[in-house]
Length: 254
Ligand code: MLT
Image (cartoon, rainbow, N blue to C red; front, side):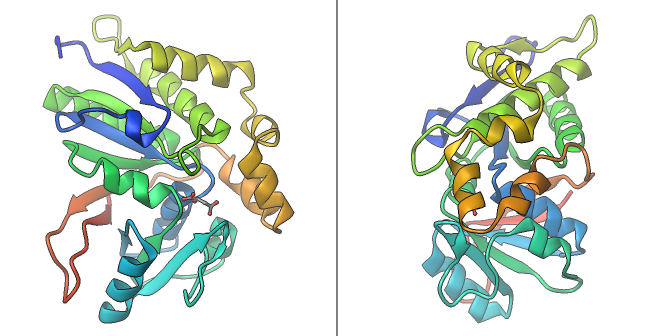
């Protein structure tokens, strides 16, 4: 990098490129990263994100943690809970760590775990995460890559519009002599969000929001579209092993 922080958006995890010198913000607006912010709001001490259900299950059972996650949006077979932020918002996770495995969000997180720093962002904690990412990028002379989780390898409207919301917040953090430079992908995400700044209205046209509505999780879509309701900054911490099963990544409250 040149001294000026560059912001770019990877509309899919596989487009993130080389991130070992970058600060990443992983987004799975519907619903994994919103769920993680919500779990921390509900006093959860630690969320482990796993790249597969099998790994999540053995790790959770070996350590006595709550096992959470979904397949096609519904609670995965044999899991304690699904991936519904409204359900979690009514529970208390004090003293209860969670292992989470989802179709896209936790896999996207694992895919960029080698970045200089990884934050998990949603609309809910937009300002808090953007602020922390900006400060870290400045301190580390790093660029910022906003990584959209997508859905099974396909672009998703909700992740891309929340990426645009983050670009807007990061630009607002810049000062006259310290403005970020925007890659074309960041400009595109910002323009997409500017085209429909009401997240919920925009998302309802998208496939995943409609799918969640059809399977009974319409309330979650509204919950995930609320902006700046949370100050939690979920941050990835690497951990080689935990108990008997290797777990690639750990989240701690920032
Ligand atoms: C995912 O990781 O793909 C999502 O969080 C799916 C969902 O539960 O809506």
